[in-house]
Length: 325
Ligand code: PBG
Image 1 (cartoon, rainbow, N blue to C red):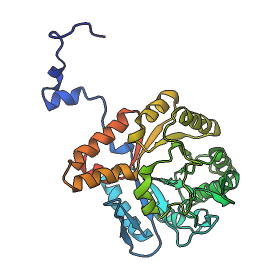
Image 2: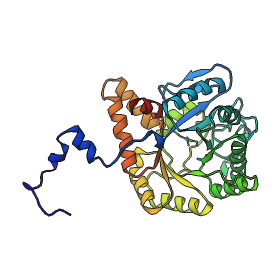
Image 3: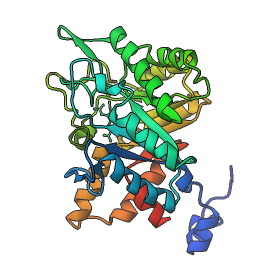
Image 4: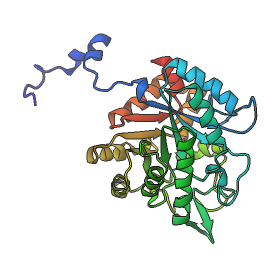
């Protein structure tokens, strides 16, 4: 600690020019830390824009390939796939169908982009007719029955070419079940990036339009974390680490920077943050109204997420960021 106070010490000296500020900057954004979410839907030549997620669309496999081509040319190194199936049913069977929408997309992308990191969201909510993240028995989400289906989903993603699977359902025991299922199928090299601390958040609003996954009844508070709790989030992380998670994700990001910092300090694993749809939509809307500068506000938000401790960030700004950096 320096002992001298003002006037010997003047912190403004190192802020005088942009070059000086650059020398002492503590946090930098690197495109290699970013993951771009992509939504794949049925059809051919489809690019369906999403009102709440400007610039992000649902794309059929062929259109997804074109978009990915652009991302790769811009230097993006990782994408996270979400699927909108042809049909939904009670058991979410489209999630683990070997010919499901994400599996088809994976095969196409794998063949064309051997180096791109292909990550997949492992959850049932986009595939169930009721929109919950697990199977419903009575008025309960049946944990253990859901876990079995999630493990099948993860294996089918690995078979189709995924580099990593990201369970986002918040069922108890899913990381251990997915690890065992992957290992049994010869995928001991596929890491599990677990959404360990996923909150029951209002900030997923635009995503649910994109993924067509709004629950038909009730909400997700019976399985996602209570926004008021941080110690419970650390217990979730602890269990996922014990079950074999290779990296942890905190989600959402901006309203949960304290959680991100706490997870960063407690665990040695890589920690990611999901800068979710509502965080993106808020800035897009404010920028559209002329109330703030989108680029500045986005860069500041992403820097804050990194400063709080994220090693990697899932963000809808990844493509624009590639152009900005
Ligand atoms: C699936 C899932 C959700 C998001 C990612 N995976 C939605 C939810 O749990 O309701 C949200 C992502 C975003 O808002 O950008 N369970």
